[in-house]
Length: 272
Image (cartoon, rainbow, N blue to C red; front, side, top):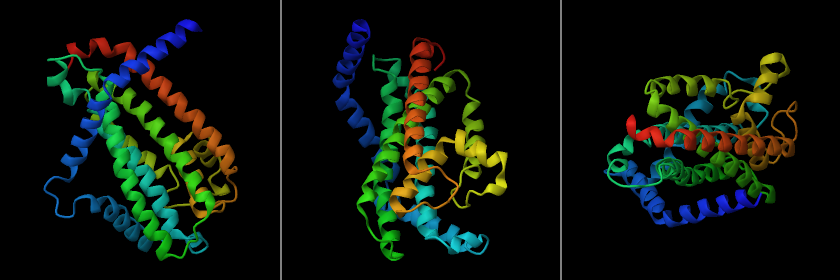
């Protein structure tokens, strides 16, 4: 136990040494994303708003249940969280390969590049919360103290994406085809997550699988509970159960990602 604590302390000390580099990398990623953009950071708000508007127009006519809840808010809660996961993991996947020139010239902790990609996406996500506030005001959704607990699933999702990003970054170094496969995986994942549709008992075993094994379901549903202030789908477990499941899933993914990344990081230089 003492050896583990000493090792952990040493790693945190080492991470602190490269904190300024992490900040610089995050700032660089954000500036590059909005470089030569007329509206700049406003796109972080406009993109989820426009996406929500299109989906609301289309799916309000398809799903009867959309008339029973604040459907625009239901949509944007799911959309911004899933978009963050998809964008952060996609960028993290190429973080090590894309930094090959720097890694070959000097020593830098390799995980810094992956962490910076996920963190820069988190900054964009925080900006996109402005779109969520606009929808709440426009639809007359009252603000409650429980809204602040929405930070819990956001933190869980960030930890989950760091772990998944590390796993994908390490794997992509050796299997570049993963970059093409991941876009298909995230597309299927999106349709398997109740972003614009509602969970129902009619789904049977598929519904049970989604509730138990889809991490994005855990994060999105508890976020909706805290933001909308009520249980949006009656068959779901309480938000507190989802909170516990989400925390376990996020920590487990982080451990898997760190273990895999540390196990193969010394071989990166041979393949990048």
